[in-house]
Image 1 (spheres, rainbow, N blue to C red):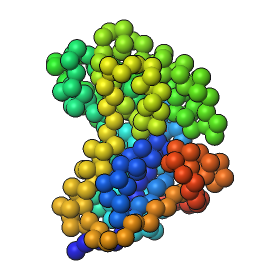
Image 2 (image 1 turned 60 degrees about the vertical axis):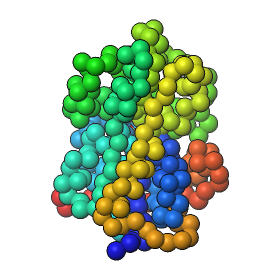
Image 3 (image 1 turned 90 degrees about the vertical axis):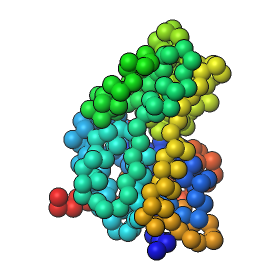
Length: 269
Ligand code: DGL
């Protein structure tokens, strides 16, 4: 039976908007609830155990919204918690991981780069994925401390972002890399800056649309796609300061949006 229930989309902050945009583009009639866990951001350098616990706390809010599917629009949260969340919840849960597979098919030099958080790169999930491709391509990984913090600032310093991206892509460029995986949803928000730095010969691989397509496939498979002919409602929530997050999320979303505060709590698990 088609379902008009909302879809939950979550990230530590604004990064998941890069995925939300693609979902909106592909399925404009679905109702979407976006959660920016700004108070707990950034996730990238926190212990996996803390992120996992936080994901379950945030699910308390989504439970109250009766979501029909969840998109973890965050590589770090996926690496830390997707397995445990899937074990507890029956709804489709779509996670994300750095797009090594498409990158290894696209590269001509045989050298690809992966920019991601330390939490993602250190995870067993990522290391298992990477090990499937190390005999085919050379993979230059780079954790990017400080980059998400800068992107999350109410007034980001573009000079600082340029400095950090230049530093974090240096080895990849020096080694002849031609395909760069944006393994953190926040980096897709600054893809224009990254492109300027690495040059137009480098292919940037972002998984936003692939995740949106996977979401649609899972909804279809579970008979959960909306059959509404109207544009779906879109709401934004934050665990951080509402006024600040309204300014920040509006800037990255590209239009003025309302942002509400959500409360999270832990279920007995
Ligand atoms: N946007 C998230 C990701 O895709 C995490 C960023 C962070 O909070 O460090 O990994």
